[in-house]
Image (tube, rainbow, N blue to C red):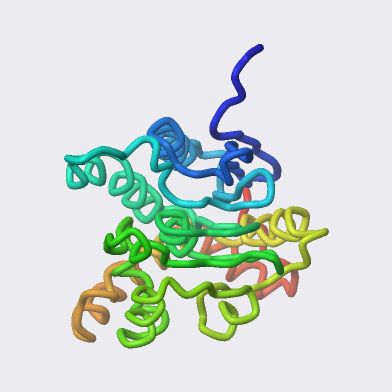
Amino acid sequence: MTAQPVILVDTRSGVRTLTLNRPDKLNAANNDLILTLTRELQAADADDSVRVIVITAAGRGFCAGQDLGDVSGDHVDFTHHLNTTYNPLIRALRNTGKPVITAVNGIAAGAGASLGLAGDIRLWAQSAAMTQVFSNIALIPDSGSTWFLPRLVGYHRAFELMAFAQKVTADDALKLGLCEHVFPDETFHADVQAYAERLAARPANALKLTKQALQASMTGTLDDALDQESVLQQKAGDSWEHKEGLSAFAEKRPANFVK
């Protein structure tokens, strides 16, 4: 019997969907899954036909976190493990110039929660839930959670969620700003595809520059942001997309940003 790929790849209407495919393990992340997902993200970033990337999962769980069978024993080198697996994955996700949607279709725990939070847009199924489960095994949150979560909910709420490994439901996630939309379970993947196709129709270069400006603003000053905007706006203004937008406005028609 041929082994199933750990990441399923599908491309439709400019949307590249990468599906975690270890459903019998609630998509717990082993080295093969992490490294393959990183490679597929990089391949999607390099493919001009791809305008939006979606990360979702097969089965009833998004990602239950690290597969502990891969990191067990008395002397685990956690630093090496993170620096060769999760850290390159999160960097690849955040550094792509294309919009990344994380479509959380079930439990997202530990590093799976970090992955779910890392998208530019987070879409959740009604049955989805997140937990920063690290403290249950006396570890600290990693894979970017200590950066993402306090920026979304503030230091104090982030610490509480991490300290008690509290489970956050989809409704609470929406209230807290951990996701942008919640869709019904029975239509979730179709709703995500429709949303992603709408995003894929937007101006790709402008969105790439917007991502660049937003990410720089997270660690810079207002003056830094103003300087960055002036440079990136010139790049946006020199593009064919801008000309098409102006023409569409003048002609009172929808703009076509897909060549």
